[in-house]
Image (tube, rainbow, N blue to C red; front, top):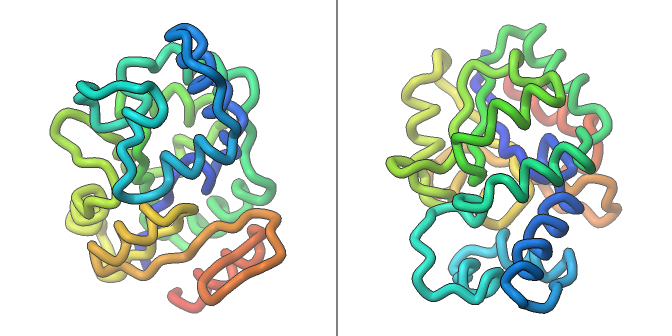
Length: 206
C-alpha cells in the first residue's frame, strides 16, 4: 500500500472563483483595483513571487499564507461557490478501498481546513490534514510533506497537486508527483485531466 498526499485548492476542490472573489473583495476594501482570476492564480501558484505585495500591496505582511488574517473573506466565498472536481469522491473511495493512508498538504491556514472539508463531506477520508500555521512552512518548502511522510504508515508516498509550488515541494521532499490539469487537453508526463486518469496513475504504485 501507499501514502497519498493531496493539495486542496485546485486539486480536490475547484476553488478558483472563490479565491479570486475573496482576494478582490479584500482589494476593494483596501481601495485597490480588481485583478483577473488568471493574475491571482499566477501570483499564488508561482514560487518566488511576493504574493503579499502583489495581492494586497503590502510590504509588511508577515503571514505565511495569503489567506491568514483574511479567513472570513475566504470562508464566505468558499461556502457560496466552491465545488469538488468531478470524480474526486471516486478517487478517495478507491484509495480508501485499497487501505491507503490519505492526507492533505495545503497552503491554506490550518484553522480553516476542517470547516471547508466538512462542507464537502471529504474530511473523514483523511488520516491527517496539514495547513500553514505559525510552526508550519508553506509549500514549496518540503516541511509538510516531510512531516506527513514521517507520520504515515507505509514506506512509499505520492503527492498530487496542481501548481509549480506543489511540484517543487514534491521535488524538495523527494516524493513522486502527479500534476492536476483538470479538464485541460494539453498534457505531459505525470499530468492528468480527469479522475480516472489519476486512479490509473495511482494503481501503478499499489
